[in-house]
Amino acid sequence: MRPEIKAAIEALLFASGERVAEGDLMELLQLGKTDLEHIMQEMIEDYHDSGRGIQVLKLDDGYIMATKAEYSVMVSQLIKPVSRRLSPAALETLAVIAYQQPVGKAEIEQIRGVRSDRVLTNLMEKGLIKEVGRKPIPGRPLLYGTTHEFLKVFSLSHLDELPRPKNGEENLE
Image 1 (cartoon, rainbow, N blue to C red):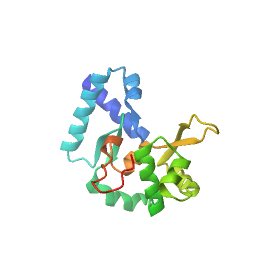
Image 2: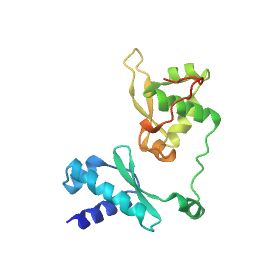
Image 3: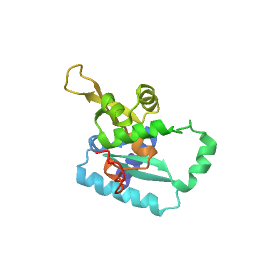
Image 4: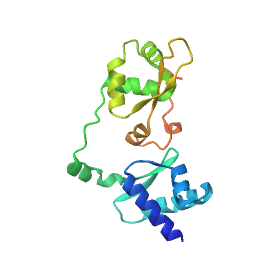
């Protein structure tokens, strides 16, 4: 039964092309969390140890099938992805959001000292941030947080993997 489950997971991850949540896999495959985690760890190791050009990665509370790093240049020549180049202002804003989330536009602008409307729009268009709710104060301003795409772009499995500021640097928290 295990090879069939692995084949089904492989098909789901491949067809999705995006992160598939653990809960969705458990529901579709009628598996418990522990069983799924064991099978996924086996698959991660199988793909890592084989001579394949793809891998299975744990990404936050889900899994994704991705190209191995050593083939990324070749794949990018074929696909020619849309540039994800970020301006210094975008990186600064993204850092504030990543470390402070959920955070409102007013707090972002207070930390940065400049207006951030355009940068926020660009980061949302790139799929790196999203609206995560509203602040419970008069006017109910939007709150922003990072997305799974943010984790993927910066090769993080979870936000806990963000680097901590070094001594002497301004702490965002």
